[in-house]
Amino acid sequence: MIIIILIAIVILLLIWGIVTYNRLITERLKVQTQWSQIDVVLRQRFELIPNLLETVKGYAAHEKEVLQSVTDARSRYLAAADTEGQMKAGTELSGVMSRLMAVAESYPELKANQNFLHLQQQLFAMEEKLANYRQFYNDTVLRYNRLLETVPTNLIAKMFRFKKEEFFKVEEAEKAKITIKF
Image (cartoon, rainbow, N blue to C red):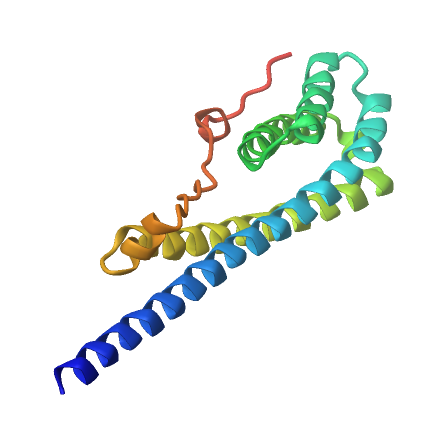
């Protein structure tokens, strides 16, 4: 009788371990999927940026610093080797794009340009989508990291060396108010 109870306990522990391991894998895949969604929108935004820059260049030729900052931030994203680098470059690009839009506000003829207006609407739609995806990503990371740290799933997580994921954070530079001086 004791042997049957011990075998039943071992089988239950084994089943629990398998279920927990699969849950951790599922949550990690959800984090990766959410990051992929952000990456898709960031890449769409980066494909839109050269068109937007060309439109602004014609009207704001003396704003080379802002235009160069946008180009540099875009290049850093494309050169980023990992998710953390892409997050940082994406956040930096959001900040410089805000500066670019502030520059555009200073040129009434640019604001009236249909091509610019269309590109601006696309960019704003992408920024809104990106904000939503960032929120979903952070919610998914929270669920995954909570599993890694709470008992009893942390036992399986440590055994199989699951690693915590980073939240998508807004850099201090992006939080700062943007002012453009002429």
